[in-house]
Image (cartoon, rainbow, N blue to C red; front, side, top):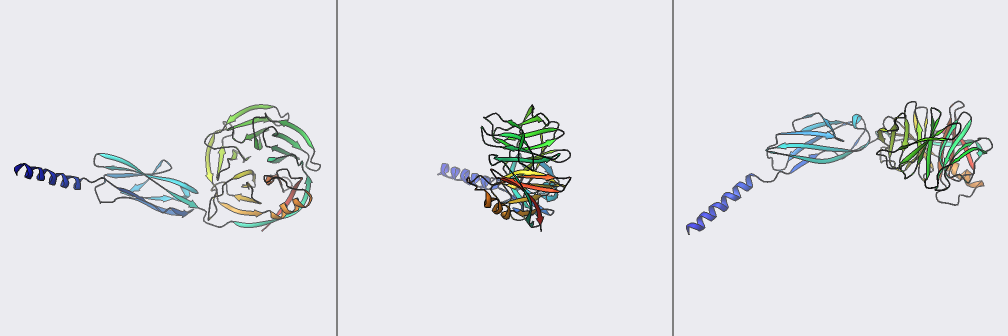
Length: 345
């Protein structure tokens, strides 16, 4: 009987001790969706109201200021898209990291444009157009497909290929841009780009990608190369090192825009072909907000009047801008024409 009482007492003490030291259960609370240029609050609580020594909050790995167990997040700082939120919790004798996320959308709907066809020019139907740029009176174009990828200098009025450099057959050529008398040309899945002399088309070097998944489109501003990788991200590269400095995520007020492809930097904005869409996006390079959408169904319809688009990949792709004469050109893969268009709001 005495042994039974002792065991019962031990069992009771164990229950009391366990109940007083129950496992900590943390909850990191934050609104899952918000819009750009607003603030949102994050808080860390313990389910059973057990004591917490302190909490540190982080957004995308960078610590942000907090007050007790709460923090205020400024979306002007985070930018658009999905953002990682974490809290490092210090409690009696232990620490624990708690993870969550939130998503930032554009704070305005995009303006809608259609287009008017001003002129058309012949284009090689054998060109699987990946990159297009207008420079010093000529079009420069890169084409894709393994064994068929090439870099070209083209006469706009006639469509004649004046100069051509084929890419090694193991590579799938993608977008290009001209910067400081050099041509920078991306490949698709090889995580590698090439550098060519503008005049001779002689290859002078190559560069590796960083965190960007693939090579799709390429353009530049005055100080950076600007790259797409088929996701909703736009990457900015240091032209001297070709290292990725930063990225932005492209969003409307309703959803992210994935499959970003050929791009052109025009008057401070980024114009983007979305893969297999009959439209061009105009994006703010500072925020990633889709400011406008250009509906080009009329251009595709006009193309089909004279040329059969046999392959499902024969889609709108290729944007070039003649800054001197304020002319905007578009074309597509295996298209027989390049169109000069005017935007209509």
